[in-house]
Amino acid sequence: MAAHEPEMNRRSLIKQFAAAGILSMAADSAPAASSAGTRAASASERRRSRMKITAAESIMSGSDVFVRIETDAGIVGYGDATNHFLPYSAEGTLKDLFPLLLGEDPERIEYLWQSCLRRRFMRGGPATGTAIAGIDQALWDIKGKAYGVPVYQLLGGLARTRVRLYGAVSGNTAAEAARQAKERAAKGITAIRFRAFHSYDAQELHDHRLAVEQQIEYLAAIREAVGEKVDLILECHGRYDPEWAVELTRRAESYRPFLIEDPIRHENPQAMAQVRAKSYLPLATGERYHSKWEFRETIANRYVDYVRPDVCHCGGISEMKKIAAFAEVYELNLIPHNNAGPLGTAATLHAALAIPNLIMIEAPWVNGDAKTDVVSPYPTVVNGYALPLEGPGLGVEFDEALAKTRPYKRPPLQKVNALDGSVRDF
Image (cartoon, rainbow, N blue to C red; front, side, top):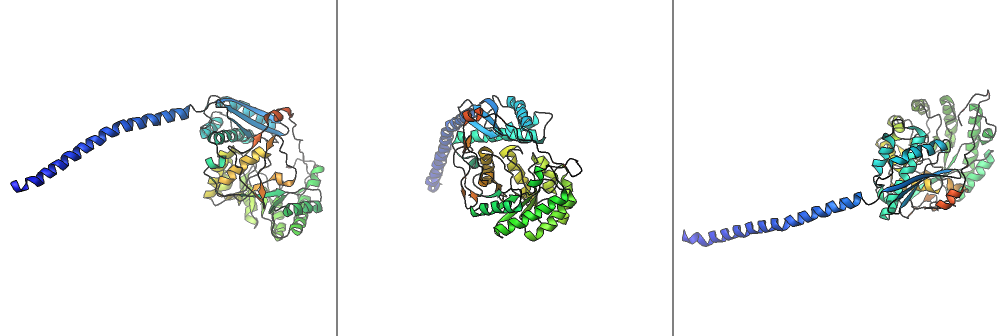
C-alpha cells in the first residue's frame, strides 16, 4: 500500500490543481463575459441611435423627379423617382410615403421598403414602384456614405469588374439610323438598340404591316453598316399584336438580332406564349413591370429569355436584386432598362455590378446627348463597358441648388392611332 502512496499523491495533486484551474478560469471568464455582453449591448444601442431620418422631399427639376432624404448625422441621400408617363402620380405617391420615413433609422432599408409598400392598403402599379424606387436608392446612398463605401460593396461586392453597355439609334430613315449605329460601333459600343417607325410617330400613326416593313428595312441597313460583331436589339415598344410580332421575328431571323424587345403589350404575360412558341429569336420584356410580383408569371413560365426591370420603376435596387434572384432560379438573365440621367444610371450600375445573372445595361449617355449639370458623373466607358463608380454611396454629386432652380417641364404627350383612327400603343 505504501509503495503506491507517491503515485496516489501525484494524482491527488493533479486533480486539486485541475479543479483550482477550472475554478480560476470560470472566475476569470465571468467578468469577461459580463464585459463582452455590456460592450455588445452598447454597440447595439449605438447602432440603433446612429442616425434618424429628419426630412424627406421630392425635387421636380427639368424632366426629372428626385428624392432627397436627410438624416440627423448630416448625411443626405438622393434617389431618382422619374416616370415620364406618370410624373405627378409618382411625386404624389412620394408625398404619401414620406411620413412613414420620418424618425426612422435609414439603415433599415428592407424594413422601410416593406413599410412603404405594406402600410398602404391600396398599392402596386407604376406610381408605387417608381416612388419606392426613389426612396430605396436614396437610402442605399445614405448607407454607402455612412460607411464610406460604394453601394455595390454593401450588395455583396463585385460580381463583375465592369458592365457591358448597349447604345441606341433613332432617325426617320434607315440610312440615318445606320449612320448613327456606325458611329456608336466606332466608339467601341458592342450592342445597339433601335425601334424604327420614328417617321410614323411624327404622323401619330401605327399600322402593323407598315411598322414591320420599316423594322426590317432598318434592321437590314444597320446590320450592313456595323457587320456581324455588333449585337442588335430590335425594340418593338409593345406595339404589335401577337400575330404581327411573330411575323416580325420570322422576317428578322436572317439578320440575327440579339433579341426582340417588348414585341407585344405587357398587361397579359400569357399572350407572350404565342410569340414564344413560334419564334426562334430570343425575347425580352419587363420595363413596364413594377415589382417582383408583376414579373412572377413571365419568369416562372419562361415566356422570355431576358427580363428587363428598371431600377427607377421596379422598386429600386433592393427589388431589382430580388427579381434577379428569382430569374436566376429559372436560368434567365437580366438586361435592365435604363433611360435615366446620372443618378438613376448610377443606381442601375451598382445593382448590375453585384447581380450575377446580368448581361448588359442600357446606356443613354453613350448616344451623345448626356446631361450632367445637376448630377454627375456618368460612369466611365472603356471598350463598350462601364467601370464602377468608386465614390461612397451611389458615387455621384447632386447639385441641389441648381436642381431647385430648374422648373419642371412635363414631357409631351405621345399619341398614336391606327389608320382607322383607333387608339394604338405608343
